[in-house]
Image (cartoon, rainbow, N blue to C red):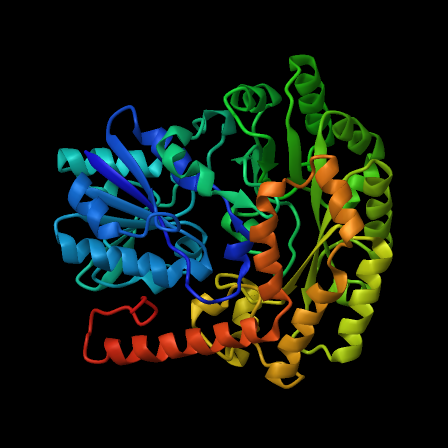
Length: 482
């Protein structure tokens, strides 16, 4: 069969983290690799090539799949609607975090099937069954829509052998490769070596999606994939690359033995870093460039309230270890909508004191599908998922709205690295000159309060138009893009 996999587009005019990074659509590349032996597969990335209709008419797929996060939901629904308008015979399939945790948001005539959880096994079985005219109800891990009612099949167990997950079919996105970027790095490859997280941070949906389990690819499988990659930077997208410290050490030893020459970007918890500073040193010696650390808070009580199971002292020790080994810190902090100006002042002072290379500030956001979302449901100021972009508050702010976003902009304006620091990172190759214009444009938005407010107004207006368009359409999805 002909299968088209679609990466949703990006909203125009709104400041958001989708502008900070445009990574390769790794999930779709993995799914494509699982299908290629039996089917003709194409990936279209609407962030780069927005003409979906032309692709549909050129390729004429029989199945179209789309995935994304909460912020992508309106665009995912728009894709399915466009597909059905082009040909009602095409089977539309959605998957990913939001579709798994909140399938009710896709209960409309444009969506035929939801893949619940991981798709490497489910999607090939689904396409194979469609091709043979078999019974979809016999396939575990699906939600089907029949007469306006969603019907779930038996649950599918999580993958038990992560090494069986195929090497992503990156050749299917080769035409887009020069349009992908990750903050300062235009030539990077995203790579997954593990799934899940054992912690229960209340703001996170990762552990919910992965059913409170962690699974890992073997060091040998990691090296097998690394050998296939090109570019300068490898971004390991695992939620905590140092979750299994002996495994991370074994991978480092194998990279050194192979003589692979990359710069590496990873995510790691501060407590993992503090447990093994010698491992940070070992990784630094083979090219570790930057670590994203979720510091989240600078006050102990607020950190405890997030169920982070870490401490401010541990965070500060992790920062010291990284800096001692010449590793840049991508430090993530969460802004509470109830903050007042002194809280922002204190965070600015804290980030400066820790000398965070790349600070990232996100607004505390209840993600659909989590207990935190259910707890805050009655307090939400909007259900427009495009505003769940971590730069807009979907909860009431204590400060007047304009003042709140003035302080969000001030966080970035007050903590951007100095010109001398920037020059040093360019000299050492940690920042590529080719990316400076893009990053400069992004920072000009993040440091401008009007960018946040304009995005807020634009998306609120769009939501109003969508609601009007949905009136009288019994099968319409009110969250779909107009």
